Image 1 (cartoon, rainbow over the protein chains, first blue to last red):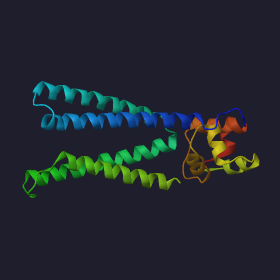
Image 2: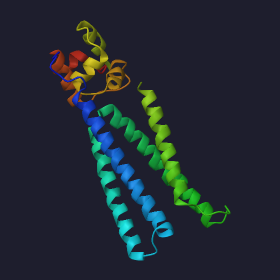
Image 3: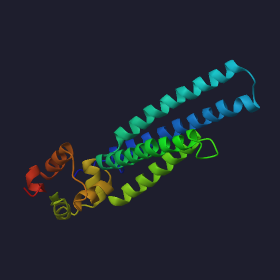
Image 4: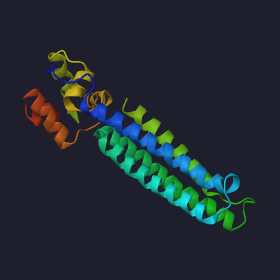
Length: 139
Length: 64
């Protein structure tokens, strides 16, 4: 075994870098989403400004997707497998439950509107739980 | 899939973290490999074989 290697491996260094980058892009995306959402209510009344704010938010969204792709590519194969399983479960639950939820709304079975935010919340919860279970499985 | 990674690592008095660093994977991956919970990809199996100076078949046994 060589002793000339740094304290943390290349894999760890790349993962830390990619995670920080993903965190920055996610934070920026959330911030621009908040500005695009609350700007018309609190800061301006101009429609072109709202379009610009939404376009900027979309741009940061694309950056976040690219950062997430790099993050996944930088993971080792076990963690990629765990991520894949968690994302597959989150997508499946979102599709099945999301469509059922929408049908409940369309058929007036539920009194309130089926909001997209509920679906986003469900995806987040499912992904987080599946990720935690996956990591525990291989511990 | 069975393997003798734990034995090979112990013979060299390496920790899981040291082996992980050599293979450029996480310590958790080394642990999962040693316990047979996770099968490595071909590139990772080759990397382990090169590291220990052995063939893939000498390290990993698919039971066939």
